[in-house]
Image 1 (spheres, rainbow, N blue to C red):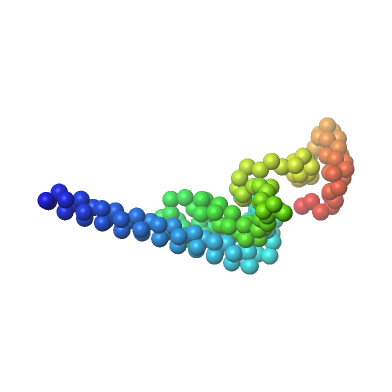
Image 2: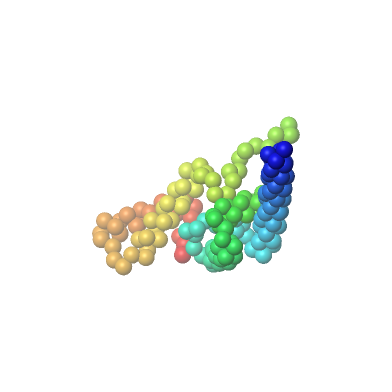
Length: 169
């Protein structure tokens, strides 16, 4: 009889703990989604697309907010604040870019979630990588003749892609 009582108490405890886990997940989901929506209200730009290595005024705002969230999560001894940030970004993207079904009621999987590896179009890849090279040559203290020639071609390539090089920081 004593074993039955211990088993019943354990099952009751496990059941309570299981329910606590489920409730915590629901609370976290709701809190993360609510936070994501509020950040969308505060930042009037697609902040959820800002990556960790992005620079610029908007990116600095996002990085500062991320730092504040990480500080709170670290203080609460959260094991991986990056996963929370990734979910918040995903919820923000879902909020700002809702997927609408086509005529057949099917939602096309055109948008990859934030943080997921995405296939960039060739045009986007060219512009991004040429811009990186342009900035590197522009910020260099000195360039060899070959590097200066490459800089000229990089600039021409950006112009050919429709980029106004005067707007590149």
